[in-house]
Image (cartoon, rainbow, N blue to C red; front, side, top):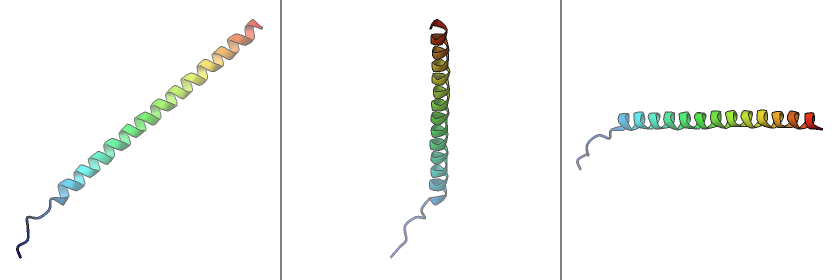
Length: 56
């Protein structure tokens, strides 16, 4: 029985590596964005609280 052509595992491995790198980059950007947003919200809440205390 004849064997088929060799499988192209080298390109598959490179492709998987690149996709994993892309996923990790997107996840890191999403996390960074969430932290930036959280910091902004905290800053705005702090400013709102300090402005409110001046009125009272």
